[in-house]
Amino acid sequence: MKAYSQDLRERVVRAVDQGKSRNEIVSLFNVSLSTIKRYLRQRREQGHIRPKMIPGRPAIKRAVLQAALRVQLEAHPDATLQEHCEMWEEREGIKVSLSTMSRAILLLGWTRKKKR
Image (cartoon, helix red, strand yellow):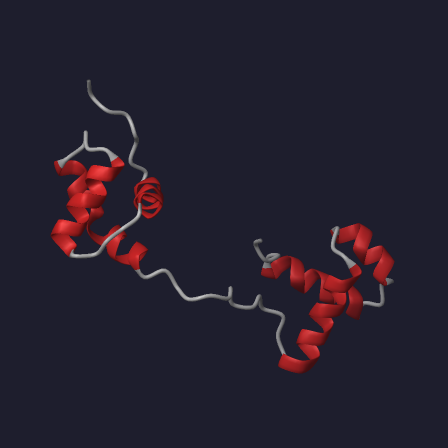
């Protein structure tokens, strides 16, 4: 789930500071009461209302794929996903799943149309 924008966060907190009721803020900005409480607690404890980092480790293979995959796609435009995975493993020595390869190709904006 994506975090609310920084602008919305600031407007919600500003509305609380201006003395508007929390129920009015809920209906005005379409956020929950718990969201308002969380923003106020975060500002009080941390001094800011920026979104928290998304948990989990960062993607390792995607960065490597994004850097060099376009060359492979241009050299072999008619290859299947499986063939691209095998070529990648031969060339880079990194085994990549079909799902990872598919996501990387989509992020590059490459189409799936093949010649017959």
